[in-house]
Image 1: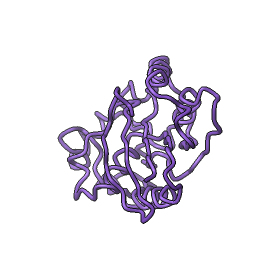
Image 2: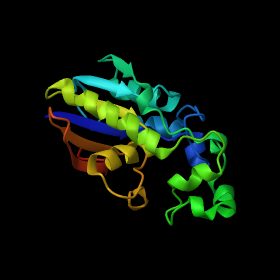
Image 3: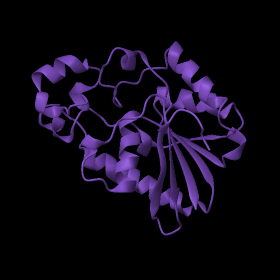
Image 4: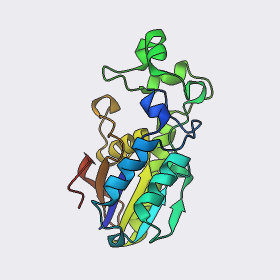
Amino acid sequence: MTELFVVRHGETITNAEHRINGSLTDKPLNKKGIQQAENLSKKINIDSFDEIYTSPLIRAKKTAQILSKGHQQIHLDDRLKEVNYGSWDGVVNRGLMEKYPDAFNVRHFVTESYTKYAINAEEYEHVYARISDFINDMAKKNDKRILVVCHGFISVAFFKVVTNVPSINNILQPDNLGVSKYLIDSNGESFLSYYGRLDHID
């Protein structure tokens, strides 16, 4: 089976300010985010991975560079970009929650109904489709260990696609540098091993 390790990028200033952090908000890691990535780099053996894939957004790419330690080529993949929140990208969460409470769940996570209000926003179903396509490609890797660096909602999307859980409202977004592990067989069937770990990465 292919082993897929999905990592959320390190913290950015927009994370710290509790802003909507989508694909249009292409900010670098802050000092804490860099330290988070460096901490994880000490907990994993990067040489045990056959390939590294990352979202091309700055925060994910920098995280991947820190984790790779220059040992491996990093493959950029647009399918791993964070969801495009359209006109909501970069906006402070609190103001949006006050104005559009039905677009957030009890954990203050943006629900799929947000597209009723955000202009030029990406539907969650489109995100699930691109992640499903990525997983199908990884199924052809024949027992390789693959490191994937992406984003908060993309991490949730991996969980949704693999487990087929009915609603993402019951899925917590991993912390920055949280790691999730999936197993994928050659037929494309996938399994969750663990979700959002910050230590004991194996």
